[in-house]
Each structure stands twice: as structure tokens, then as C-alpha cells.
Image 1 (cartoon, rainbow, N blue to C red):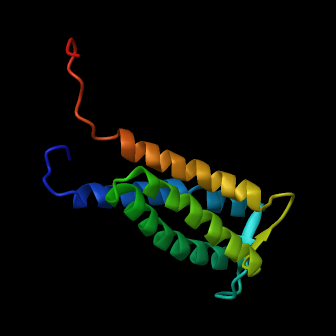
Image 2: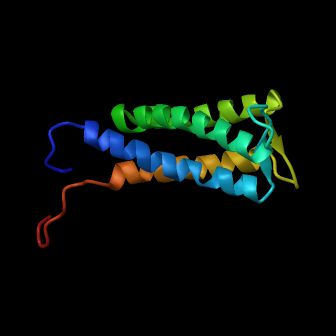
Image 3: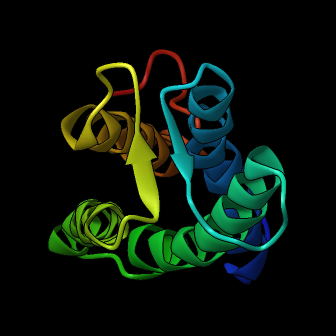
Length: 136
């Protein structure tokens, strides 16, 4: 990937890595009973939540990949944090996102912020040219 002339392969790879990193905590929170998404797509609450969050996070990851990987200025890296906060706050206000067992929006935003920070660090520190030993 270092020798490729097009950034498209890097962006696509980063998109899938970002999706995995951002998506893993949410189904775990659902399975541990901390939160769920109240949408009436199907009768089963777990299936309905899973379908909703999968589609939601596919779109959210596309936006994050664009701002982190495509746009190169440092201030664009802050936009995914704002998008995560606004998106989850909106879902919570619309009673789509339901919290249980002491879990709340602050904890969820903290989980999202950690995941997005990990994605930004992965994008920043991967595929750098190796430093040769003995050179400064």
C-alpha cells in the first residue's frame, strides 16, 4: 500500500477498519443490556436494534473516513467527534436510543470518543515510511 499511487485503496481499507472499531462496542452494550435502539422494524428488539445500528454506523463510518482520511487538515479530525455526539444525542432525544442499568449518554459518547480517537491514531501512524537505522 505504500507504493500505490491512488489513495482509494487506503481510504477503503481505513473505512472497513473504522467500521469494525466503531461497531464492536455497540452490539456488546446491547448484549450486556446497557442500551438498545427502539425501532419497530421487526418484532424482536435485538434484531431491530442490530439492523438499525448497522445501517446507522455504515453511514457514520463513511463520514468519519472522509473527514479523517480524505481531508488532511487537523481541524477536520474534530468533526467525527461532533457527529457522534450530535447523532447519539438526537437518537436519545427521539427515544430511539434507550439506556438501561445506569448507562447514559455520557458513557456512550465516551466510548464513541475513544473509538474515534483510536481510528484517528491508526490512520495517522500507519503506512509511514520506515526510519532507517543509523540515520537522523
